[in-house]
Length: 303
Image: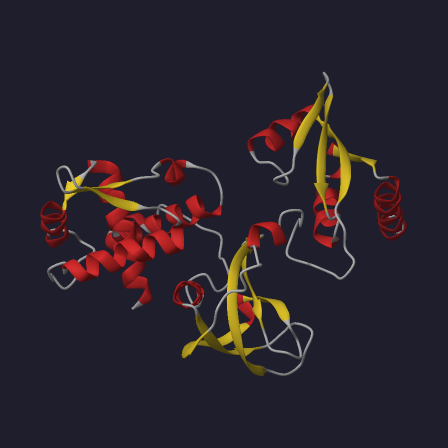
């Protein structure tokens, strides 16, 4: 059911984006001929209103009515063209909808497999939207057994092709980050919850690199010396939202960051090999050097 709703949301957004302002009568007429409308049903006015509310709540995109001619249009259309996970999700859902309609394209467009993307994502988003608790069966990598718990879903975060859900697990465990691909089952309950007023996902993850948050972890200024070749990629796809290119030279650039230099950040720095050198802070530079030396001792034995 949730997937069908998402198809309807995407259809409505794309229709208004491509055709411009439309009256409700025109939208209903287009809906009857849409391939998304599998059952050929009329678009009820109440359903249309619910779609508008859901689109605003999930994607932050407002569909409003111009009372001068009773046409509907996307008020903040620039948000659909902006960067970030919202636009990525819109594109992904839209493309998935197109592929489901045109089987001939399936063998010509390829995706990396993303764990859990189809199984629980729609359910989790619906629970977040409706403010409903989830009844989850979960198996962590760190535990040999499954556990069942009721979870208040606060927000979703995508990192390295995996979806993570942050929320409240109970008085004993408090707030936790769980991976959707470790869920065995997830069911929306009838229990409602209220997101704490003081909580902000943007503030919470503002300086976090990945998804790991540890007590006492504080962000710090990081300077990276990046080869001119790799710098081109960093300009088009920043390593972190705080990225600033503060120096440009013939052979390299200096990029500045303000973030928590956690495990994921260190692993990504190492993955670039000699293309990247840590300049500051000194502690991070030493730690990266120690990891490289330990790797050298391992591979140095290979003949």
